[in-house]
Amino acid sequence: MAPVPPGIHLLVSFNKNQWYKALTFVLTFLLYTSFHLSRKPISIVKSELHKNCSLVLEQPTVVIGSQYAALPSHRTHMDCSWKPFDKSNYKQLLGAMDYSFLCAYACGMYLSGIIGERLPIRLYLTMGMLASGFFTCLFGLGKIYNIHSMGFYIFIQVANGLVQTTGWPSVVTCIGNWFGKGRRGLIMGLWNSHTSVGNILGSLIAGHWVSSNWGLSFIVPGIIIAAMGIVCFLFLIEHPNDLKYLYLHGSSPNKSLPNLNQNGVNAQAEVHLQYKENNLQSYDTELLLPKDEVCVSVQQVKLVKSELKPTAISFMGALQIPGVIEFSLCLLFAKLVSYTFLFWLPLYITKAAHLDAKRAGDLSTLFDVGGIIGAVLAGVVSDKQGKRATTCAVMLLLAAPTLYVFSMISELGLGPTIVMLLVCGGLVNGPYALITTAVSADLGTHKSLKGNARALSTVTAIIDGTGSVGAALGPLLAGLLSAGGWNHVFYMLMASDFIALLVVFSRFCSPCDIKELLCTALGVPRSTNLSLLDSTGAMVSIDPTMPHNTER
Image 1 (cartoon, one colour):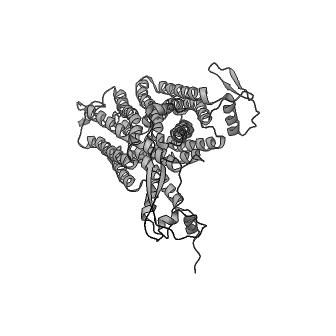
Image 2 (spheres, one colour; image 1 turned 45 degrees about the horizontal axis):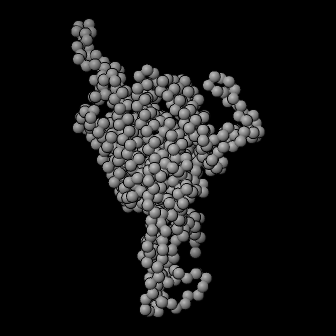
Image 3 (cartoon, helix red, strand yellow; image 1 turned 90 degrees about the vertical axis):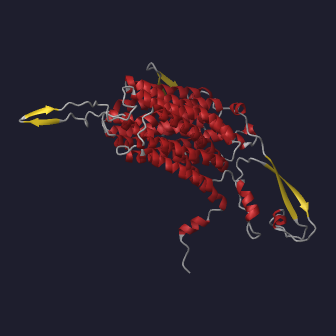
């Protein structure tokens, strides 16, 4: 007999519960990847909606004898841009489109979490993905059918922003139900890379068609997210408890129930026994007997379950959970920075590095690669140190000066730009990823809730909804400030990082916490004297003897 391959040994070593966990992890990862994949095309297509046509619209000439004469031309350098973005205020118009989507997303997010707690998550998420696919395709059809109405594109952006709010609370609730607090930072750091993976795939897909037919840059991602909505309907399992009924009603007497994870129990079940007049022992009877005891002949038992489900938490009740308000405000400014890069980075690279739309879109994916590394690193460090707030504070502290360096060297060539894109991506997206995943899940299962996991979707929606306000403001402010120079945009981003740092630092971090993490990152003894520069250039010492005031 041939030996069993080692790969098969590995596969059979996992029980059913672990396989369902893996399925939920991979499926929710792919589902939200498709959400970000469908959001990215607008940033890639911006440079095609308005471009400098001076190089392609040369004035035609004819030869008369030995003389060259220019033919009269009625075309301007704006003619090859897509109306209505061919005007001089095109930056404001493009910013208004971003603002329309993000403002609708922010407003809808507060309602989405509350609705999601009261509807089946699988159906709620499926309908949102199908609707999002429809509106994303509709934007691309504007190119095919030659639609130049600004109102048409604004309407699509608003509608798409509303339906995309179904995504985040739903997937975070599912992943929080299946995975406990142990190594939650690492697991969710890896899982949250779907944001960057979606941005990368969206950039590559949109960039493939941006120069030839930018309508397909929207239609293809729209089809993908709609198809993933169907996959969600067919395979998504919201909670481990949902599988109990499958095995209770579908298993044979020779099969045993899987050891299902009960993290975040949503219901308290009571079992009532009803005896019948026969002596046949049923499978339900065996379930009531300990495995190490001998089965005896008893009357048949019928299990009747009645579940007392706790009511979903109210909006004000979620705000009273310690830390929700502080982390929501911190995310507002952190997400402002992240989404400004998401929507404006390709256009900035086009102007600063003088690249075409496709190459700029491809280069911008390095920011998201750095974001993947930063999210995983933030999760690992926060798990090891047990201080998620301090981890966010350190990364925010380092992000602000890094943004300034990026603005200074991005015009020096591709080499420095590539390095700084990776570093900035890690420091900007690290805190953003940690707050929206592990921190949200921690607060949604806070001890003050006494085991009621029905609050997870609402808490997630409040935190991400508040962050989405910043996501709406960032691209809008970038569109307004970029008219006076890109330096103003970077000053705004640096100020936002500092404010986010102050919000989380004021309650959850002490200077001793910051020093401890910095020493760990640098590989130096904790007794080493470190110092920072304040806004005036003076040295500010971090005293290791200062008391802790960390609550997390």
